[in-house]
Each structure stands twice: as C-alpha cells, then as structure tokens.
Image: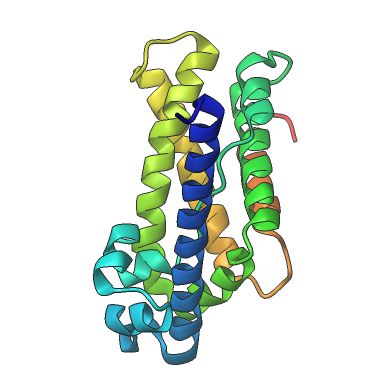
Length: 207
C-alpha cells in the first residue's frame, strides 16, 4: 500500500503533466493567433495542432482567447509574508513591491510571457479576458490587504485599496501593451504606483 509520500509524488507528477499540457495548448494557441489572427483561428484548429481533443481543450480553457493568456505565476510565499508583516512602509508601497515581484517572477518563469506581449499588441480585443483575470486578482488582493491591516474580510477599506491597485495596474498594462520601448511590465507597474504615491504625498502649496 503506497504511503503518504508516494501519494504525494504521484499527485505532483499528475500536476506537472497537467501544467505541461496546459502550457502546450497555450503555446499552440499563441502561435496560431500570431500567425493568422485570433478571429481566424478556431478551437478545433488549436486542439488539432496541440494533439488534444476539443473536450480536452475545454477542460483547460473556457475559450480560445483565454488559451492565449499565460497563467499567472503563484505569489511567492516569502513576498506575501513580507507584505503582511512589513510595517515600515505604507500598504500601497507594500502592494507595489508585491505586484512587482509577482510579475517579475512570471516573466522569468513563464516562457510564453513575452510572446503574449506581441499577441496583445496584435489583438487588443483580448483585454476582456485579461481584465477578467485582474478582477479575480482584485479579490485576492483585498483579502491580503484585510489581513495586513487586521480588518474583516470584505471590508470596504480593503476592497477600496485593492480596487484602486488594480486600476493602477490596468493603466500600467495598457502602457506596456502599446509601448515601443523595451520597458518591462513590472517596471511599468512600479512607475504607475510611484506616480500615485507621489501625488498623494504632495502638500498643497509645495512643489
């Protein structure tokens, strides 16, 4: 009878296979969309090129547009712990640091990340899917902000900070999407947060 460690290893292998297949489907979807345009590509074409069934495709993605978006990399535990415990900076500054680290890690660890930049420049209509992801992220951020500030989950204060942060991220993402320079997304995010932080710290009458 397999022990806990054996079961854990088996689960890890299954998880690795699922992640690999998900990445394969996403890579194929990006290739086809960049080559032909998203509107000209069908789910059946993506599934065939990825050597999976249509049913398998929909087990992993709800739409062809969603398949073109790389998965967000899970937040680093140490980064989350620092966000929750570091009282030497404001919550907004701590959020800036947390989001910068998460996006930076996603870019380094996700092979499809930079290709998605090309995809989004070519297919701006995909922003609906991206913003749906940001909406889910907003809820996660609100929960973290509530924990950091010792507030009740779902508090107005935490929800407001999270919503404002996602609005800032959206501005940064749009700048990055249309940017002709090689500026990294995480740096665009930090620039946008820094602009807001500077603006809120300005004292009337001072320059």
